[in-house]
Image (cartoon, rainbow, N blue to C red):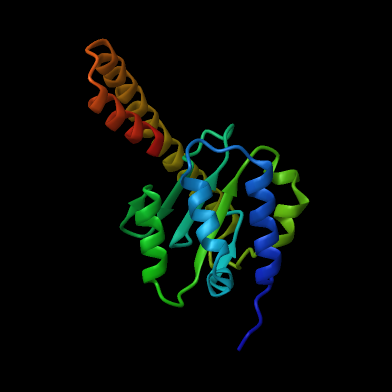
Length: 180
Protein backbone atom coordinates (compact mmCIF):
# COMPACT_ATOMS: atom_id res chain seq x y z
CA UNK A 1 0.00 0.00 0.00
CA UNK A 2 1.27 3.44 -0.91
CA UNK A 3 2.22 5.69 2.01
CA UNK A 4 0.38 9.00 2.28
CA UNK A 5 2.33 12.11 1.45
CA UNK A 6 1.26 13.81 4.67
CA UNK A 7 0.90 11.86 7.89
CA UNK A 8 -2.35 11.80 9.84
CA UNK A 9 -0.43 13.36 12.75
CA UNK A 10 0.60 16.35 10.61
CA UNK A 11 -2.99 16.79 9.39
CA UNK A 12 -4.25 16.59 12.97
CA UNK A 13 -1.71 19.19 14.11
CA UNK A 14 -2.73 21.58 11.33
CA UNK A 15 -6.46 21.17 11.99
CA UNK A 16 -5.84 21.85 15.69
CA UNK A 17 -3.78 24.92 14.76
CA UNK A 18 -6.62 26.10 12.52
CA UNK A 19 -9.21 25.58 15.27
CA UNK A 20 -7.04 27.47 17.75
CA UNK A 21 -5.99 30.39 15.55
CA UNK A 22 -9.08 31.15 13.48
CA UNK A 23 -12.48 32.60 14.30
CA UNK A 24 -15.61 31.08 12.82
CA UNK A 25 -19.16 32.15 12.19
CA UNK A 26 -21.29 29.55 13.88
CA UNK A 27 -20.33 26.15 15.17
CA UNK A 28 -20.42 24.18 11.91
CA UNK A 29 -16.68 24.39 11.09
CA UNK A 30 -15.65 23.48 14.63
CA UNK A 31 -18.13 20.57 14.87
CA UNK A 32 -17.04 19.10 11.56
CA UNK A 33 -13.32 19.46 12.19
CA UNK A 34 -13.54 18.05 15.72
CA UNK A 35 -15.43 15.04 14.37
CA UNK A 36 -12.74 14.52 11.72
CA UNK A 37 -10.03 14.64 14.37
CA UNK A 38 -11.57 11.80 16.38
CA UNK A 39 -10.76 9.06 13.88
CA UNK A 40 -7.26 8.40 12.60
CA UNK A 41 -8.77 6.36 9.76
CA UNK A 42 -10.63 9.51 8.69
CA UNK A 43 -7.42 11.55 8.81
CA UNK A 44 -5.82 8.98 6.47
CA UNK A 45 -8.66 9.49 3.97
CA UNK A 46 -8.31 13.29 3.90
CA UNK A 47 -6.22 14.99 1.26
CA UNK A 48 -5.70 18.65 2.18
CA UNK A 49 -5.47 20.70 -1.00
CA UNK A 50 -5.16 24.36 -1.96
CA UNK A 51 -7.03 24.10 -5.26
CA UNK A 52 -10.10 21.91 -5.11
CA UNK A 53 -11.67 23.11 -8.33
CA UNK A 54 -12.29 19.69 -9.86
CA UNK A 55 -11.77 17.42 -6.85
CA UNK A 56 -14.85 15.82 -5.29
CA UNK A 57 -16.04 15.32 -2.67
CA UNK A 58 -14.53 18.59 -1.50
CA UNK A 59 -15.05 19.90 2.01
CA UNK A 60 -14.40 23.65 2.31
CA UNK A 61 -13.94 25.12 5.78
CA UNK A 62 -13.51 28.87 6.18
CA UNK A 63 -12.79 31.32 8.93
CA UNK A 64 -14.20 34.78 9.37
CA UNK A 65 -12.81 37.43 7.06
CA UNK A 66 -12.73 35.32 3.90
CA UNK A 67 -16.19 35.90 2.43
CA UNK A 68 -16.60 32.14 2.07
CA UNK A 69 -19.23 29.91 3.70
CA UNK A 70 -18.20 28.53 7.11
CA UNK A 71 -18.42 24.91 5.96
CA UNK A 72 -19.70 23.38 2.74
CA UNK A 73 -19.33 19.96 1.18
CA UNK A 74 -19.43 19.81 -2.60
CA UNK A 75 -19.94 16.58 -4.50
CA UNK A 76 -20.70 16.22 -8.17
CA UNK A 77 -24.43 16.51 -7.44
CA UNK A 78 -24.80 17.81 -3.86
CA UNK A 79 -24.05 20.95 -1.90
CA UNK A 80 -24.28 20.32 1.85
CA UNK A 81 -23.93 23.02 4.51
CA UNK A 82 -25.63 21.45 7.53
CA UNK A 83 -22.89 19.91 9.73
CA UNK A 84 -24.97 16.80 10.48
CA UNK A 85 -25.53 16.20 6.75
CA UNK A 86 -21.83 16.75 6.02
CA UNK A 87 -20.73 14.32 8.72
CA UNK A 88 -23.30 11.73 7.67
CA UNK A 89 -22.14 11.97 4.05
CA UNK A 90 -18.47 11.64 5.00
CA UNK A 91 -19.15 8.64 7.24
CA UNK A 92 -21.13 6.94 4.47
CA UNK A 93 -18.27 7.10 1.98
CA UNK A 94 -16.46 4.21 3.64
CA UNK A 95 -12.75 4.23 2.90
CA UNK A 96 -12.97 6.59 -0.06
CA UNK A 97 -10.72 9.60 0.13
CA UNK A 98 -12.09 13.13 0.17
CA UNK A 99 -10.51 16.51 -0.26
CA UNK A 100 -10.39 19.28 2.28
CA UNK A 101 -9.42 22.89 1.77
CA UNK A 102 -9.31 25.82 4.14
CA UNK A 103 -9.86 29.51 3.58
CA UNK A 104 -8.44 31.88 6.16
CA UNK A 105 -6.62 35.23 6.12
CA UNK A 106 -2.96 34.93 5.10
CA UNK A 107 -3.56 31.38 3.85
CA UNK A 108 -0.95 31.68 1.10
CA UNK A 109 1.71 32.80 3.59
CA UNK A 110 0.94 30.17 6.24
CA UNK A 111 3.75 27.63 6.49
CA UNK A 112 1.61 25.31 8.61
CA UNK A 113 -0.90 25.13 5.76
CA UNK A 114 1.78 24.60 3.10
CA UNK A 115 3.25 21.73 5.12
CA UNK A 116 0.06 19.66 4.88
CA UNK A 117 -0.90 20.35 1.28
CA UNK A 118 -1.16 17.34 -0.99
CA UNK A 119 -1.53 18.97 -4.37
CA UNK A 120 -2.39 16.29 -6.85
CA UNK A 121 -1.24 16.34 -10.44
CA UNK A 122 -4.31 17.25 -12.44
CA UNK A 123 -4.72 16.21 -16.07
CA UNK A 124 -5.60 19.79 -16.92
CA UNK A 125 -3.49 22.71 -18.06
CA UNK A 126 -2.57 25.19 -15.30
CA UNK A 127 -4.56 28.01 -16.96
CA UNK A 128 -7.67 25.81 -16.99
CA UNK A 129 -7.12 24.88 -13.33
CA UNK A 130 -6.94 28.59 -12.46
CA UNK A 131 -10.18 29.22 -14.36
CA UNK A 132 -11.92 26.29 -12.67
CA UNK A 133 -10.64 27.45 -9.28
CA UNK A 134 -12.08 30.91 -9.93
CA UNK A 135 -15.43 29.28 -10.81
CA UNK A 136 -15.33 27.28 -7.57
CA UNK A 137 -14.57 30.33 -5.48
CA UNK A 138 -17.35 32.29 -7.18
CA UNK A 139 -19.74 29.44 -6.37
CA UNK A 140 -18.62 29.58 -2.74
CA UNK A 141 -19.14 33.34 -2.61
CA UNK A 142 -22.67 32.85 -4.01
CA UNK A 143 -23.40 30.22 -1.36
CA UNK A 144 -22.23 32.68 1.28
CA UNK A 145 -24.41 35.44 -0.23
CA UNK A 146 -27.42 33.11 0.00
CA UNK A 147 -26.53 32.38 3.64
CA UNK A 148 -26.30 36.12 4.32
CA UNK A 149 -29.71 36.68 2.74
CA UNK A 150 -31.20 33.94 4.95
CA UNK A 151 -29.59 35.50 8.04
CA UNK A 152 -31.05 38.91 7.14
CA UNK A 153 -34.54 37.41 6.77
CA UNK A 154 -34.20 35.53 10.06
CA UNK A 155 -33.08 38.69 11.86
CA UNK A 156 -36.17 40.50 10.59
CA UNK A 157 -38.37 37.61 11.78
CA UNK A 158 -36.61 37.64 15.16
CA UNK A 159 -37.27 41.37 15.49
CA UNK A 160 -40.92 40.75 14.68
CA UNK A 161 -41.16 37.92 17.24
CA UNK A 162 -39.59 40.18 19.87
CA UNK A 163 -42.01 42.98 19.07
CA UNK A 164 -44.93 40.56 19.43
CA UNK A 165 -43.36 38.97 22.55
CA UNK A 166 -43.53 35.49 21.01
CA UNK A 167 -40.92 33.69 23.06
CA UNK A 168 -41.24 30.25 21.40
CA UNK A 169 -40.98 31.76 17.92
CA UNK A 170 -38.00 33.86 19.01
CA UNK A 171 -36.16 30.84 20.43
CA UNK A 172 -36.83 28.72 17.33
CA UNK A 173 -35.63 31.50 15.02
CA UNK A 174 -32.57 32.15 17.21
CA UNK A 175 -31.61 28.46 16.94
CA UNK A 176 -32.01 28.64 13.16
CA UNK A 177 -29.87 31.76 13.01
CA UNK A 178 -27.18 30.14 15.12
CA UNK A 179 -27.11 27.11 12.80
CA UNK A 180 -26.36 29.38 9.82
